[in-house]
Structure formats: structure tokens, C-alpha cells
Length: 295
Image (cartoon, rainbow, N blue to C red):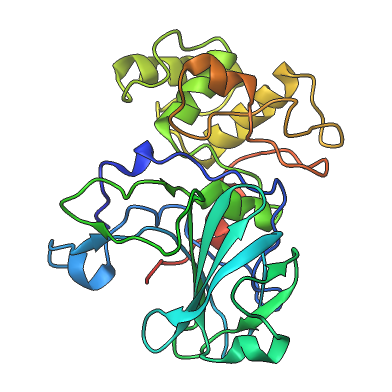
């Protein structure tokens, strides 16, 4: 599938360290590679009209319950969306603007949800429209935003757009993946295998560092960042920080969440660990959850 070369420029959404999965009655299914991807019917012919700006939480039957991922102010409800579905816009207390698209029209009324209302994590917001079959989630810096933005093929990402991938992984208690080049550089640097600029593009020096890490960790040495490599590096990072499964916390260790003002800032808030004593361990389980994203 085609993907925008700018997808790695998006900072990872932070928000609540343990947000709620918005579809409590639906088995979690989502694609970690969907952000910045092309619309399937457009990219099939090599003509993407716009890039995918969020993640689809798929497999939702008609009437599936939708809940608030975290404490927030409702700044839009029953807004026009796609295929006859509606959207809710939430401004969270943690500083995110959330777009949840795929509601059945008027379903918010069942729970008395109105514009300007404050909701708590887990509060019922409405129900999924069966023909849409999912909730599409986008994350932005809150600021004064009141709606989502389109990421057109020929344009850079919309101002304030954030990558929700690690945010969604935290929802389901999955282990947060190292997806971006910067995150991987930082991991290799923390472990002592990479000495270059963490903000640089992946290069031969990066591959050499990765091969050195693979050799030291006793796994297959192919210079590729696959599931085995991800798991081994995550375990090494845990050991580096003296962190065990029952001891890790968001502040004990972690990685960059995207572009920052400087590399030290990203290391100082190493964020790839989950709260509640769950550590990051790689993409193996995440890959089991992957389904083809669509919007």
C-alpha cells in the first residue's frame, strides 16, 4: 500500500497514559501501518487522493457501544462523517482533540450526550452504524480545533495532526511498538549501538548498528527490524533500565513520541512503557491485531 513519505514527521499522540478502548464489546482490531497510507481504491491505481489521517478500529457490528477514551469535553456530536455515519469530537483534559467517526445518527441521544458536555473515561457516547462497521480515530493537538482536517496527497500533514498508533496500542494493553525511525535510533543509541543523529533518516550506519545489536542479542542478523528484533530490543531496553514487568512505569524508560525540540528532550521522557506495570515488548502481538485499514 502506498504511504506518504511524511508519516514519520507526525509526533505520537500522548494523552491519557491508559486510554479506554472505545468499543468495549468489540475485539480490538487495528492496523499499525495505516497512518499516512492511501485510500485502498485510490492507491490501487497509483492515484491517492488523500492520505489516511487516523486508525480504523474495525469489526464493529451494528449498534456496537462507543465509549469515551478519556475524560473530555464534547465539542461536536452527530457531525456529518462518511457513508451516512456521524462523528463525535472530543477535547480531552490531557490536551488531545479526538475524532471518533462511525456513529449511528442520533444514537448519542440514548445516553443524553450534548454539545459542551463533560464526559468521563468510559462514559457511553453512542452506537456504531453497521454499514460503516468501525470507529475511525484521529488525534490532534487540541488548541482551539473544532473539526478534523483532510490530509491531501500533494500536501504535508495538517497542522496539529498526531500519530495515534501508540495511543491505540495503550488502549488495549498491547505492547507499544517502535515504529518510527527516530524511535528505533533512540533505542539503538540507549543500548550503545548507534552514535549518529536520532533525527536522521535510516542509513547504512543505522543498519550496521542494528546488525551489531542483533549479533549481541543472539538473534538472526539480517539488518531488518522484524518482530524478533523488536522483541529482543525491547527486552534489552527493560534490562538497561533495571525494569521488570511489574516495575515499569511511563517515566522509568521509553522513547520519542515524534519530532521534539531536541534529542535530549525525547530521552528524558522515554515513553514507550505502559502504565499499570505493563512493559513494551514489541510488535508480535500488534501484528496479530492488524487488519487492512480503510476509511
